[in-house]
Image (tube, rainbow, N blue to C red):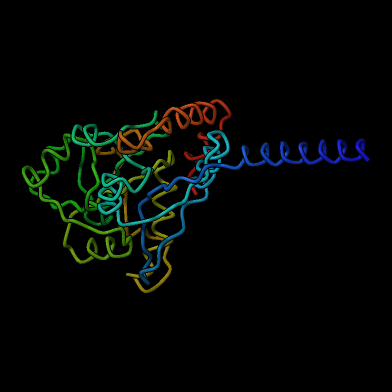
Amino acid sequence: MPRLSRLLGCLLLAGSCWGSAIAAQVSKSVVLLMSEELDGKGQVIPIRTEIMEVLHALEQRAGLKFEIRRYPWKRALENAANGEGLIFGISKTRERLHNFTFSTPIFADQSLLVTLCNAKFQFNSLNDLKGKTIGIVRGTSYGEEFDRLSNVLFKVEDDTGNIPGRFQKLVMGRMDAFLYYSSATNIRQLENRLNQQYAAEFTGKQTNAALFCILPKPVSSVDIHIAIRPDLDRGLMEKLDRAIVRSREDGVLARIYNPR
């Protein structure tokens, strides 16, 4: 009987240790704020597949589990500044550097000018936007020089994340172009995709002629990060930085540049 008791005790101890090991492997849940984009029915567009792949890679490598919460971008920024959680898809500005701790860059986004093809204009520098109206997503930075000259050299039209609504403003002549962030390397392919998704809504038919054009030169190219309010960091950025570097070395991050 004493021997049986010792055996049972050992088994219980082993089970306890095994349970602790499993518990240690369970990912820590953290809130991750992201922007939302809406379709023509006002429904939130699902997060792109390649972005989800990147997030899963970071979760695995950092030992985290993201609780994704999506808001209009301006509200996501405000909520992150108020301490709700991490924020994904943020670029650095002087003001934001006072409010957030940033991860190492994850990828780079280009801010591209989308116009009507029959109203294209030459763009080589911000001076070419003089007197024009450019649509921007409220709360989004498109590079510090663009931000500085907004409503000074050119007028900005504040938009929400409703993509069809942005195209509609363009068709109605409420703006000369709007800025569209993308990490795609093949701009013509991106242009074709946008026309396939949105042009028929305004022409009433499928056509091979492009309604919307993307100007070849981007307004800016910015590094995209994850960020958090400094007092809430507690080692999260260090974990994420290691995960980002590993994901880059593994080639996972490169997939975000593949256009869909």
